[in-house]
Each structure stands twice: as structure tokens, then as C-alpha cells.
Length: 207
Image (tube, rainbow, N blue to C red; front, side, top):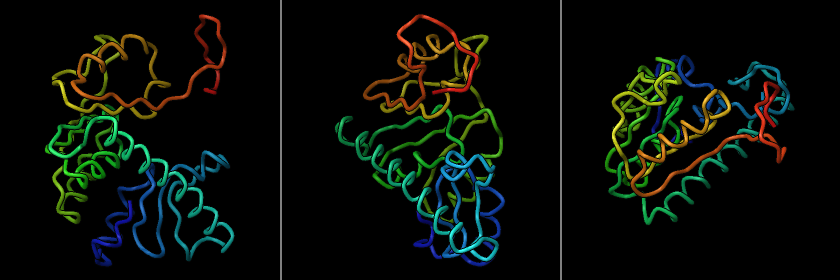
């Protein structure tokens, strides 16, 4: 998501740098964020400043996270197409991080966008992004609970998004049952999977 169109002040840019890192945001001409560079190189770099990187590093960081941003936006487009339209619908993201999918859904006219996450930092992120974008997204610091196999208090939604969470869960089939029960129109799942045809549980790095 490119935040430059919202004309962030210098203070806004500094505040954005405190909150954004995992998902692919363009904060300014000189600051970008996203996990794609780390996925490729494993260097633990999720935010990069043009002034603190070599030209080659900056260009690669921007390219890789630009590809990720294009992928995320493609997913939103496909959700919009397969659900019969995001506009006017309710959207839930079960592990929202900074809320990329929720804000893009709001830009497509979603009536209500609500994110859940184990981390509490999205509380500040949501407040900040709501202010600078003028979009209203909601966040609850409520994770999927592997003991109860539920997101406590979650209500059914037209569109449910599950991105990069299932690999962290010890009860994926229960999780799938739960998010399916919350879905009224369309369920979107992005995850990595073991590539074996055998029935097994693995404790290795995800494929």
C-alpha cells in the first residue's frame, strides 16, 4: 500500500516508521517496509531507509516488496471477484498484522473491516492509519486460541481472510473448521504446506 498519496508530514513519516515493518508499505520516497527481503535473504530487515542502504540494496528491497505488494493487491482483486464484490460487505482478517488487507478492502468499499491478532501493536497501527488515510478499520487484540479452537467473540463475516497464520498453529484442522464457520460469503487462505502426500505432523521449517 502506497501511503504517499495521503501526503504524510515529516512527523507522520517518523510515526509510521515506529509501527510499520511486516507488510509492504511505501511510507515515503525514502522509506519502505515489508517481509519479502527477509524471506529472500534471511537478514531480518523489514524496513529500509534509502539513506542507510547501498543503491543495490535499496533497489532490491523495493523490488522484492513491490512484488509482494502486487501479490497482495492481486489477492484482494481476486477476493473482490470471487465474492461478488467487496463493496458493502463485512471483512475479517484472522491475523491482520498492520492491516494491509483490511485497508485495501476498505478502499474497495467494504462496509466494516475488523482485524484480530495475537500482538497488540496493531492497536496503535490502526489508530495511526485510520487518521492518515481517513479509512475506518477496527482491531481487536484477540488471537485464535488453540486451547478452545476459537477466536473468542468473533462473529460471522461476509469475507474471512487467513494469511500466514496456519503454519504457526498446532491444530490447523480445528482452525479451518472455525474460520469456515465464520464465513458467510468467501474464505481466503494463504499458507505454506508440507509437500508430502502422507498423513503426518512435521516440526521442521515450512515448505
